[in-house]
Amino acid sequence: MSTIEITDDLGPVAYRRDKKAKKYSIRVKPFQGIVVTMPYRASYESARQIVLEHHAWLLKKLASARKAEADVSLDFSEGKIVITRRHIMRATACESETAWWTLKDGALTIFYPQHLSLSDPQTQLTVRTGLVAAYRAEAKLLLPARVAYWADRFGFAYSHVAVKNMRTRWGSCSGANIINLNLHLMRLNDSLIDYVILHELVHTKIKNHGSGFWHHLQTLVGNSRELDAQLKSHSIAFF
Image 1 (cartoon, one colour):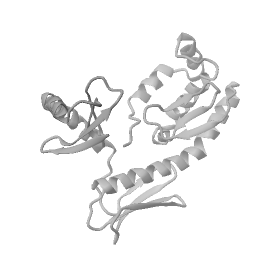
Image 2: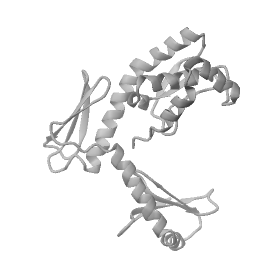
Image 3: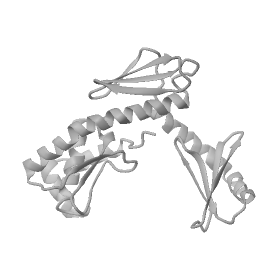
Image 4: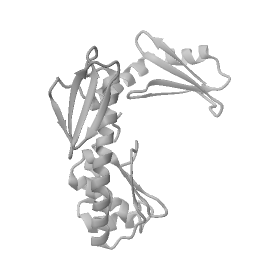
């Protein structure tokens, strides 16, 4: 059960009752705003008081969230293009009430209503959804082949490769040696993509991040710590 209230300076605040919650919690995330989780029988008035007490902190967190939103929002003028590995994205205004996209023959086309700007949240959501579709198509072409290449070169055995839209990980390896790779790897350079793949392939043999894992990975890539630091400098979150 949840309710959303609009405030003058904090914008929308979502209050969510949770039967498992024993105390209040507040989180602020890009494109989600402020979410207050509260014990199921708590009053909304008490939850509003919690928000009021954390007002200054929430303003700072919102500023950080808005910056993160801007970092992944595309606001470009009519005719400007965005190029991924295998696609060219263009946006064009049209006589429509809603924004939509098409992906065909290497072209990602964003159509948006003439009465809206490209920075409008509706249009930005359409842009991100279209880009995810483009990245997914590219990932399915590239990533399984790269995993097969490195597995064959270094003698790794794995079950299969799954391409996913993950929020917190670039990749993972299951207990059954299924290699899960994030479609957002398509936003990285080849050396970092290969590093993630080799990282997960080593996990087919070593299921932890102990010293043995890092030593094995180091023998394969030579600069694992440097690449790991580079990887951490990139944000997985796209929206």
